[in-house]
Length: 106
Image (cartoon, rainbow, N blue to C red; front, top):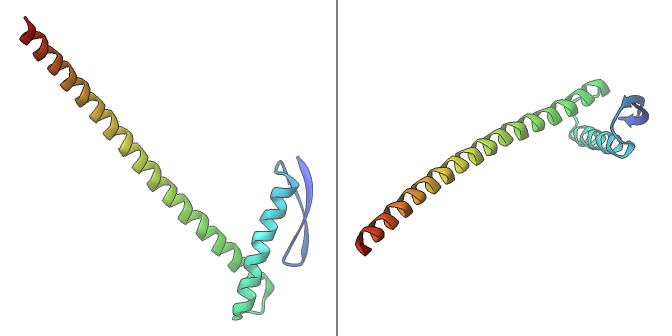
């Protein structure tokens, strides 16, 4: 575990993690960027609320990406099954054709 210092919305935070320092800097940067976007929109002066709203937006994105990932995974599985079915049909038709040709040559 590494101890990595990050700055979230002006607050210093030391994190114990197995992630790289670069990864943690990207995470902090992403959250800080979202905080700045929310601050530009106005609506709340409470910094903790701004940070929570930013975290909620990011969590929402994660959930949407997770849902889409599951949909794509299901589509891939359906395509795999369809390919297997087509391969089975092709094999059957090839055997039938070979049997027909074999009978014709006899």
